[in-house]
Image (cartoon, helix red, strand yellow):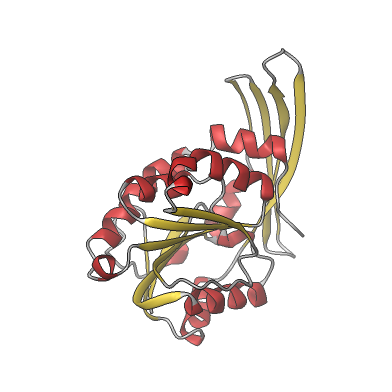
Length: 253
């Protein structure tokens, strides 16, 4: 299943789903800025960069950044949101697949947020993603990403409705135990400037990956110093990540 997202949904996403990045972005920035590797390598890779909200934060703080996303429409907004940095050759946004990519640059930090890695289809895709990330990283660099746990995905079964800012959005969640996937159906309307309505509908899945298996696949990809943390403290390892709804994985090359 491809999750590339359409033009209208990309616009809605850019307006409505930036709060997570605003919350976690400064924590990741602070984490990396205080590591020795950040003084040697200021290149950041934002994997599954979406509309470039996290990219903006790093660019505004003096880093160079490459963003990769499979959705051409999401990349349109990433480029619009960061066009001043693109003009200065500080940013580049590329259409690509997180499970199979190669780049000329080496990056001190590779980051992927807002459960983007949960969107990978299976463990083979996860393995290929980790291998691709490892190859483009600087020695002693960091790979930071978050995952929804089984407990967190169970919470995706609720439904909600949003109506504001010229948008009407219905969100309906479900969980398929046989597939170990949570599905979120997002549909609604976006009001144009002329008053007409554009309809959109997307079905997004989040695949459950067992945390111990994730760690083993990172080890196989040759990462070291792998640990799980929460957004409250990225420096503090937690013993039982499966008890959390969402965890952050920090892996060092």
